[in-house]
Amino acid sequence: MAEEIRILIADDHPVVRKGLRMQIEEDEGLKVVAEAADGETALALLASLEPDIAVIDIEMPKLDGFGLVRKAAEKKLKTAILFLTLHAEEDLFQAAMDAGVRGYVLKDSAMEEIAAAVRVVADGQRYLSAALTTRLLDKQRDSERGKAAAAAAASASAPQLTPSERRILRLIADGLSSKEIGSELSIHYRTVENHRTNICRKLGIEGTNALLRYALQNKNTL
Image 1 (cartoon, one colour):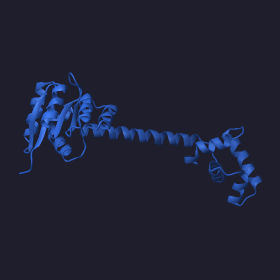
Image 2 (image 1 turned 30 degrees about the vertical axis):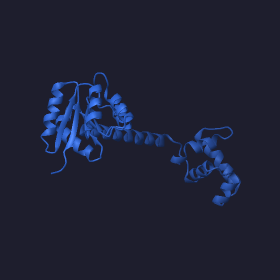
Image 3 (image 1 turned 60 degrees about the horizontal axis):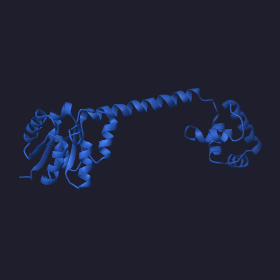
Image 4 (image 1 turned 45 degrees about the vertical axis):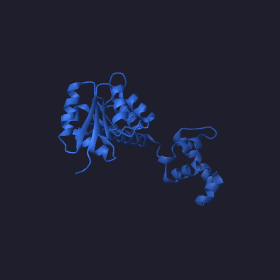
């Protein structure tokens, strides 16, 4: 028989602790070795029992989840921490990951997910609630769509430069002078100067180095 995975549950609500214990221990091989109603008690139990996994509510009296994680790290405790929370905000999740938390389970789905989350974390991997994963993916998709729309709008409103003018702009962004660009393109440098004048007119820019600044700022879209 495989070695048991030993678990500590810390939550200030007795009903939540009871429900989590029942769900966890329905899975053969998972054993809850202790419960705590506050962060200080949980930290003491981590140090004395050294469980494999600790399921910790972020919001607890005396010492919250983040404080517990920080103090556990200071004590060099080896228990993997799995946060339990009502909060699905990305910044809170990211802060938890940055602090070294191995799992992040939303309370809304904890009873369905907790046993699987414990096993994933015990296996050395990170666990993230499915609902939060969906939210993060949706946000990423919306962000990418927004960037694409902005790029399309910028492209639609951009001056209609010819392929030759765009190529000259790219070479300007690379730091080449008119004579160097002429040599690169096998054209007279005065032709390059004429192109530069036309580009400035189309872009509505003027002044020393204005074209160079534009070329550098828009190099990736030329």
